[in-house]
Amino acid sequence: MPEALAETLATPGLGWLVGIIFLSGCVRGFAGFGTALVFVPLAALHIPPVWVIVVIMAADIFGPLALVPRALRDCSKRDFGALVLGCAICLPFGTVVLERLDPEAFRWVVSLMALAMVALLASGWRHHVTFGRRALAGIGGAAGFLGGFTGQPGPPVILAYLGGQYEPARIRANILLFLLCFDILLATILLVRDMLEMQAVLLGLVLMIPNALGNVLGARIFDPARARMYRFIAYGLIAASALLALPIFG
Image: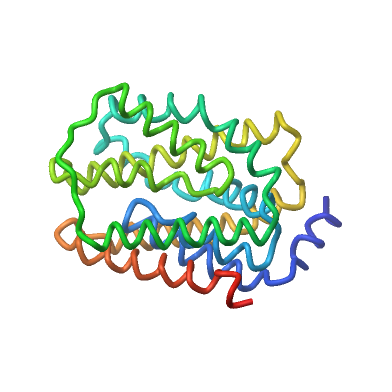
């Protein structure tokens, strides 16, 4: 184990990864989402796709734990349960796609998806639909499949909550808890499929510390009265990450 840890600490670009995961944690702390959307594109510049997924999963399982009590108070348990059910069904199929993606294709997919997400969010588009349990299970399924090969399960769920009928605190809590459960499900599936690289897991555990610190800092500065401002800060950081990771820039 000491040798494996020493190899992990010698990972090229470790300093950048620490900074990226801290920033990503801050975004999740004050926006309720964004860890993967910020971290995954930039991390793909330094480590292989499967490693990116394993690292963000390992780092993110424990990072948001400090935010769980507040999220449990604010969330809708009905919505949360349906989302997780759909995710559990479809997530394994996404990991099959992950095994077949080469690094450059992975960067294109995660970067363009993040940019499309930001464009839609920033456009101010909103729907006025109240989703039932079946629809929420389908949304969770889409998130699970997408997250299985990109490490970014958030977009379908975030888009589902763009309706004006949801309070910011409830949106933040539901998304935060769903993403935490996604990480737990992903860890289980990767273990079963023998895709958990030990060095990648150790790297994720090392990054867990700056991720947790970022989550706590982001939560402390979050003010529901300024939710709109925090959302646009998150959009800007996600867009910058996606643009920098596009293969056309190297």
